[in-house]
Image (cartoon, rainbow, N blue to C red):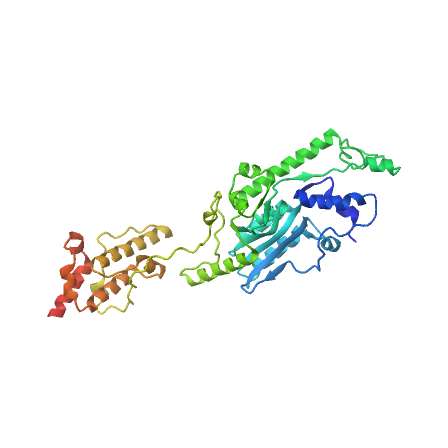
Length: 434
């Protein structure tokens, strides 16, 4: 049976980050047994199975379930307690596993102890930041208080339709056993040194000084808790404190900025796998489908909720496909098309990309005036260079039997007349007539 004094010591006289409902269950079990006797299990029995499972999609699912404590032993685990060190180790091992593509925290907990929590969240953030793999979380069905602090460290947070998140608050419980002592014929005498040594003991009523000391500790921890959640979720501390430790279900959690999407664990696994598949098929793919969260505020629209990473974009209207790019029939020096104004080469990668796209867009515009449809966005996505695109357009024009009519119908504007594509088309048409 679980050790009664040990469990009672973890509940009474110490600040807790736990939802009220779960706290009442624990107090209901411990309270009547403080005078002695046995204690039934206060949580689901466990066979101490590993915290982590690997899905067929090579996604590691780390369980965060039960009452959370700084440390636990065999008896604690049998009572549904889970240690912070075990959670940190499971996340670290999953991130280091070369066969694992991403990690999802499967959270179903009403919270637990303060001790060790902030260090755990900081460690999870450090592990995640040092690794290219995404870290998501699912409130399945509860991510409350200390458990919410852990879930908030994820890049994306799901909550099931009936799931709960929040309870961002701190509570401390003092039990006055003096009345029970008197009925039992017990009289407690403390011999101590240090004026505050026995403040808040269970065998006498709580003094005002002891109450003020406990309240100050609770207030300080509450301030730190709100700051931690605010930083992880991209909210302000005032917004987090404004929840007043309330609990939010499903869609309401999205509106409060405490979650990103409504969905189950299965949905989270499927969407992470789909993101990996998309990134694998796209050019210049990166290994992380979810950018790290940047401070942002949640909105009431779940379709545009905060930091939507790699959402599938609507397809662009289909244009005539860019023809295959054969080797040029004449030396490159004769076929090269130099834009009227060469884009400046910027020193940073973003500037170079903008310059490349501008050059491709200019070629597409020239080609359009000659009746050749070019999808500039598709060319960029496929990594087609501006030079290769020009050669492709020229080759298409040279293969047209009506090259002469192309020249006749080309606009006679200065821009069209100065176009290298038009000049080259005229040259090839003249050569064909000769």
